[in-house]
Image 1 (cartoon, rainbow, N blue to C red):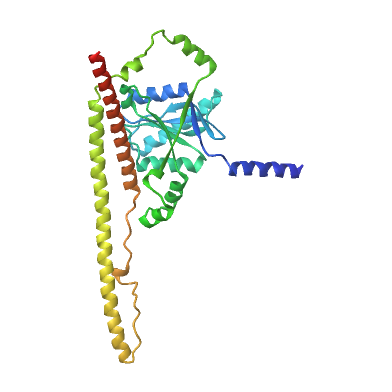
Image 2: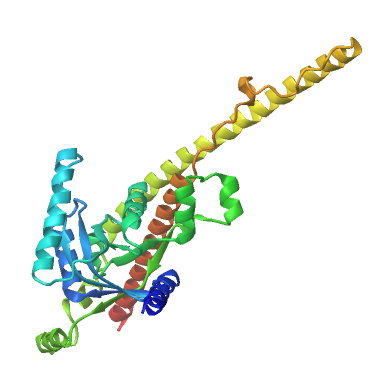
Length: 337
């Protein structure tokens, strides 16, 4: 009996050790509607909420969610938020609803979510949950007829670097790590029960097009492009400031190396004179000398995150501009006919 129990435990530990990678996030339609409703009601204020569900093999199932109360950065209110979260989980457990935490969701403005705070939240979740995701929803894209849902997780290579706290250029080159390797986007699959699908089929109208189709034909996207350009310019300014930090670091490093070479040359000359006089030479390194104290290299994490945001804004501008050109050509063709 003991042998069978030991074999069973070994099989479980082996399965946990070789857990398959996360391939897809399957989210219930009701949970999607809750996320959209919460984010749109409080827009442009950024809000967050808890994701509940199950981790089944390579699929992370999100079956329910609930919002977090909007709070300020205050310790007392933060403690109340934690108590609220625990109470909600207890209530859901009592009514036999999935209460396993699988991550959280949050709203964003024009995709500006790549921040240090997001990474810190991920790392805090990773301490207690083996696999978790963050679902990002952008209410500003809803006016363009786009369901802007995105599921993200941190890459394993980035988490290893972050735990080490070493984001120097040498370490990043050694790991062959780039700014594109911070986040991994997981495909989202929206699922509904058979009854819900049948009910939605009954609700469908006989019209060949829906309101969403009309929204996608709007050619006035000037505010969206303007806001993207403003955010992009701000990111470029921030990136320029980060580059100035590195330029300042390399200037100081070059100055220190020149001072070290001058000091070493002086010490070697002095040692030659001491040898000629039959005296013991002095050591060529002096740790107490300030010029031998290493200058700490600035972290490249912030510049990597800003580069991610720049790439995101450029992609959004490119996508919207391309769609606008298609609409203009379509409108021109219709007028010509």
